[in-house]
Image (cartoon, rainbow, N blue to C red; front, side):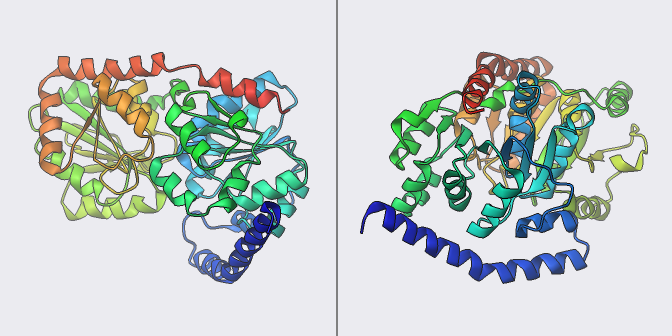
Length: 432
């Protein structure tokens, strides 16, 4: 059996698996729609290749899984839009939080050129409908979202594909390697794979990518720029600090049970007092976290209510999309979530951008090189349990100079690693 025939056979089997599970996925969708679960509405029908009448053709289909990937490529997308005045882009996500980030970052002047849709499930027929409807000149995926039928259909339609900000941990590569030729033939179709680091490049080459198509462009997450703050929120946090002479601890992108852990840890901070700002990763957890605060009798304010933070407030529940940068800007210490919960850790560069020191749990497999750089510089401290978390918070709370030095180290790491934005923009421009 030739390589091509074997690949086609494996692609057919892969497609059959998707068609086998689609009825179950549709039932789950309908049940969640009926229950009015957050993030489930008619726009998600595009996952089943049922598109909105308002969906327009675009020059690029750009896939980002969720919040982290969207935030990472916003500066790159805006740079391309500025460089190519007639460029239009369809950004696809698979989560409602990712969709909310697209809408948040591409409001106003960007709305006519950037649209959002949920990526269809990776069935061949669905992907053919997607490419026919959008008629892109280029398909881009962010970091490590490699869907074989999306790539194969694009190639068959003579639409080049690329990965930007590509990462590939050894753990992920070992899993993909088990797919053998099916995966290697898929990654060989990319026009280019723009990797964050040499380690990522070596893993893609190990998995069968074309050597002439894999480049190292750096991590676009280092291209973060400060976000215009929510002035009312910033004023409230500044006022709390002035009234109490306390410190602000930002807990960003948290998952269960990290809120409980943070509450226990911050409870030990009395001199100076601390305000804990909790921003759950997913909106559906806003209410459960509020219930946790009520059950513990904690004085809290929910941001969406508009009630002011006062000297008695101990927790501010950030229950709105797009406010985390303001909180990190005002914070004295940041905890980055998904690191005690086994999620691999979220973006530690966001607090570092504002010279805020970072503490994380041990789960950091998402961006190991980034975490290592921040750790070696002294900005990020990894803790293993509640006791070590308490000790680290207490150490920084008691020593403003040490806290400031750790925060400044993070912003220096970001400054030293810029360059990926221009490199990736140049690569993408060659395909337009």
